Image 1 (tube, rainbow, N blue to C red):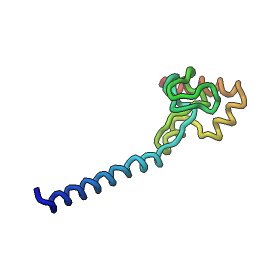
Image 2 (image 1 turned 30 degrees about the vertical axis):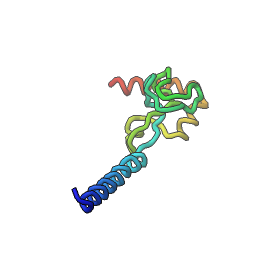
Image 3 (image 1 turned 180 degrees about the vertical axis):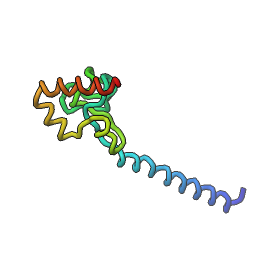
Length: 109
């Protein structure tokens, strides 16, 4: 292989790597935190309720303080909440219980 072929191959490899590195950034921009849809043990990262601090450690299904990352636009369809809605709901324990029951019923269908 001559020097010219080596340079072309190296340049093509760098271009391909650069194009591939853009894909995760584009995906990250099209995802949102959806609160109240995660089943027990299936949450993404720490919840806003402060009950745990790690991914997959929630003990309650459909807790409005826990979130799962979903594609933008699908959270509302699933019955989930954005962060502001979740924080407001967490202030009333009776509403939290009703929300969890409603989501359990909806997700079992």
